[in-house]
Image (tube, rainbow over all chains, first blue to last red; front, side, top):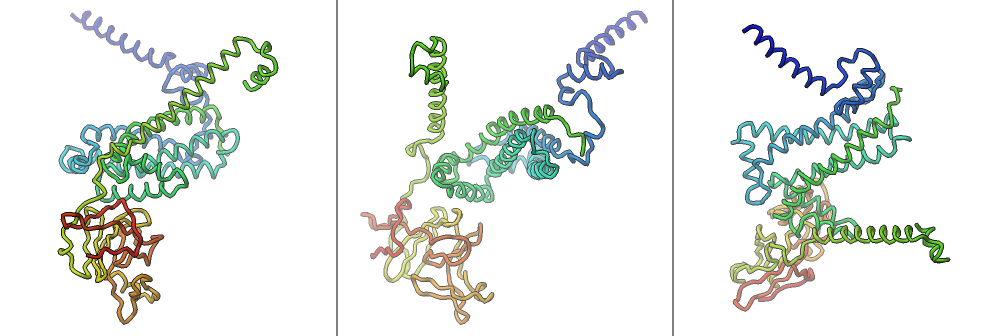
Length: 244
Length: 192
């Protein structure tokens, strides 16, 4: 009997060991060489350089603002996904769905407020991230391309914020977007057409809500995600300055 | 590619069949991509005939419902109908700054007069807000604080011009007929 249990335990242990080794591939990184190979062959770890000096990751240099922005983006994606289960982007439903999320659905208020606060915070952290990159001169060669991607990501963050603002469909939303799209109309030549395209009409109505919703939950996040992939990859390729 | 093309022009035998087809291929690809981009824009630009918005024109009851000197705000229509001794006129209640809906107030001037701001005078009607007579009726925009006199002339805040005066007539059934899509002269009056 004991032998059977022991054998079963051994089997399970072997299985777990195989799972761990297939995940990390190289065992505990006892030497620099193994550590390097582990980082190279693992998808999660490969984002980090094989070698990292302590001075490179000094918190006081980056203040972790880019990482915080990405963290908030993940929070927003997850909470946004939760909200999508209840929210219907039509003028007849949107406001009531938002109220239900806030007051009726279990933890709906928490999820909605997480989404809202994370959105506000992300705008702040992205701005601060840009300021930090500017102040440490990290936009200069060879990182100028990544600076360009970063400014586009800032724009996407702001557009996500703007499109998300309409979705609760309350007075604040409607008039804010009325004002925002009227600003677009002031642009020379393409202005009125841009407004018509954004709203899918001449007033902030059903079409506008649907368009902003599609941009908010698919268009802009997808575009942003693709740019983020390139952004992070370039951070790795451009290397670290070693903390000046 | 441009260099290839130059050589092709100079002497067709200079260009290989392979690079000629490559040029044709990339050219077709570019044209097709641009066409797809253009048609994507057209796709998003829905035809006005497929717009299920409220019609611009509507009826606003018989003229007799409006007293002389009255101001009637039709909030849902975003229209104001004024009746003066010299006739009717309709205002499109859309702020000329950034498109919010100004609200009607009995007094839009006395706080400015109290602050010592002078020269608040409607050039069309000649009405002026003075320390002796500080309160004029009008409209205030909730978004950025633009203010208008009763006849839609702007006098304070960021609004760049008066609100639009729109077409109003008496329909065959005797009711007022307002068309928000037709902007008329600011001195237009409908005599009934």
